[in-house]
Image (cartoon, rainbow, N blue to C red; front, top):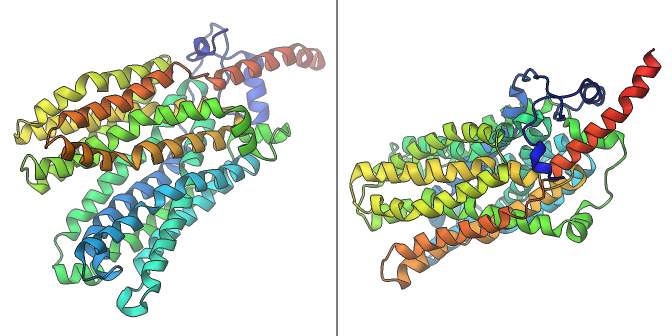
Length: 479
């Protein structure tokens, strides 16, 4: 039996429906019945709850990256050597990448043992609290060496929180989703990346209007402190939610594992490797199409910085609109095949992307950026989360999905900008090695797509069979 053949069933048997309602499981159980099923309305509280943390994460990511280069090298890492000051500022920026996998392990253990809701409350507090603390942190002239030490400590706390946030936010959406809308629900937390970029771009644009002296003195602190509003909204939304239906069912059946990470490492390591490899086609192109483009277009093509940032913002807007659409499309097709096709499309179009971009025209900058970041990356990112979640059983889903995703981010994401700069340098300023790197990342994910097991649909069939077996007994009792 191939699990993927059951992916898009929109019908449920009466017994399956009764079982789902009785257990509180709104995740949907498919069936081979032919009768049409009315679609459930979207659970907007769940969707906004899963989206909020992702928006905060990426808002902070881009704000910190901008401020680190302009401010932190001067007020937290003052030095007579300008290069060393900037280098240390970016070291503080990169700290979160190294602590994300650890945060994923810690909080996914809590999530698989105690519950998704409690974990998401903790990760959002840790992530948001670290951001606000940075905005309130005195500089080197006031507290000396404690300033950079505390800054790095807050970044480490953010990294731990971010590491646990993604898996919990994804599973909040995924495990609440009706079976025939998992792709749509799973795309929503992924939208937080582009929404966070849009919000950060707007804030940076406003901050550039300030006089430089005021910006350096206190203006840079505004977005960090103001993010508490986003954090409080996210906490309020999440506080009104119950734990996911799938976790409640697992808890009622006593299926929680004492040490999920041990189970993942010993029995599900193959699924973790597949998840790491699947991440390559998303995170590598993200840093090439969405961030390295700024340096390439301004330094190589001579484009104006404000036009490049506007093009990236336009592409982020397109990606935000496109991702839920593409996620919904994946509910009507085999998701593994669709992911493979998306990665292969990126392979085919990455050279035309650079051909268009290198014309140097303003319209070409917008077309190429929207194509690369808005459509190609947006397509891959839209279904990546759901694809990874489907690879793990509920007992280890938080741990396995988080571990695979965060390790993939560290391996392919943390190195992408450095690799791009290095390839450009050793090739004498040629763009084609960077395009080949994008192709390399996508090929890894294409290969991985053939090894996706789709555990979720095996689980669905088990639930169907249990419901079908229980139906005659329930009918006899009722009569």
